[in-house]
Length: 387
Ligand SMILES: Cc1ncc(COP(=O)(O)O)c(C=O)c1O
Image (spheres, rainbow, N blue to C red):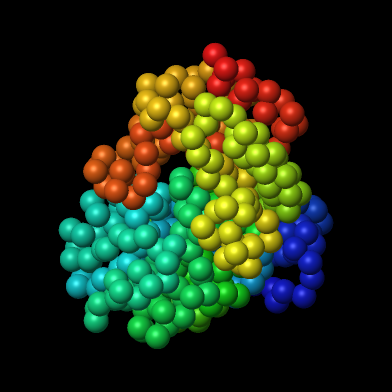
């Protein structure tokens, strides 16, 4: 759906873009149009909707809202982040080559290698935190550069502007997975990216109660093809899920501010703890890409990862069971704090040698720092580390 133009501040757009009081009743909140089909007055004459796979008013409201938040013209919503990723890769043809990061989300790696390689697409996974590596990985058939930044779970930073420039020059599309940063912190389309993809399951939804994805672009031809794939492949979100995601975006800016504030405090606390080997947080001046993060992000996000001294995988696993406020669970971006062990959970689909080669150590622990009181979060980690 075509979005409204960006003229206002983020919070105003979050609350109002794509949201009109319901024409039939005046309801302030977008109704959940829980219907699969729509009445037609004559064959093929209707009020803009004929079948909910092709389009649904609750989904339209969400798509307009997300497009506006990303400074994009178009958004297609999907039943999951993976559904959105699947649709974007289907823009390619057999024989096309994709460059992606070597510590990207495990599910993205899995669909690339285990699903799309079977259809003749070729993938190279590289350390994208240096633009030189991206340039060196280009092939004559490179048609897509897949950027995740901050990366999951190593929180490396990719220079979006630079990578998008390289893609453009090579005639390839640049896709940015903006799940970790959200449009509140980072606007990939404004930095030259062609498509933004989201697991809206995370910060956009914000309450760990919905699985949803989205692809956003300013390009008319890409949008047309994405809508065609959305309708043809059918990975569309239900109206209730769209309603939940829309409810989430209304407080995205407020939640992100607190996530960022809490993550910094937690990262600083961990960095000072004697049992902690290394803390990865893009907001530390010692982070290798701190300057890029500072330039392309409003703040540094709510994710922190760290390793333990002695590199003992059993100690890392045990620690994840000892916290009382941080819940051991996959996913991230909800109001509640989560802790997880990527090697045995979110990134278990990466072969161990691939995982270690990309720097994802056995004792790496990832925190999704929620919006609780920071002191309680630090106390919780302290008691678990001291056990
Ligand atoms: C960065 C990133 N991209 C995409 C996905 C996939 O999204 P979903 O779980 O909504 O399918 C995830 C899920 O964890 C993710 O972390």
